[in-house]
Length: 197
Image (tube, helix red, strand yellow):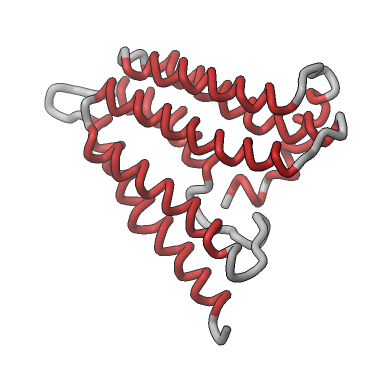
C-alpha cells in the first residue's frame, strides 16, 4: 500500500542517481541478488544488523534498476520479467537466512508462503482483468515486507530476553498478518473486480 502510494515521492531520487550508473539495468538487478545472498549469510550467522544493511542495499538496487532502464532507454519486457523473478529470489534468500539464523522455521515458512500468495494474487488476477500498482492499495507489498524485515528484525533481536523472545514473537506476528490480512485482502479485491464477469 505505502510503496504504491508514495512511489512518486522516491522516484525522482532514484532517477537522479540513475544517470550516474553506467552499467546495464539487468546488471543492477542481478547485483541486488548478490546483496540478498550476503544478507542471507549474515542473518544465518545471527548478525542481524549487517544482515539488515545488506538487505537494505538489495532493496535499494531493486528500486534503482527500473530508474536506470528508463533513464538510459533500456527498458525491455525481458528486463521487467528478470526484475520480477529476481524479486522472488531476493525475498526467499533473505528469509532463508532468517530461518537459518533463528531456527524458527515455522513462522518463516508461513511468511514465505504468504508472501508468494500475496504476489500471486495480483499476478493471477492480471490474467482475468487489467491490473496496475496504483489501484491495488493493499497492505504488505514487497517493499513493505522488506522494510519490516530490515527494521523489525534487528530491533526484535536487540530486545530479546530469556523470559521473552521478541524475535520469535515478531516473526509470528508477521506470519499471521501476511496470511490472515495480506492474502485475504487481495482475494477480496479480486472478487470485487471480477464480480459480474
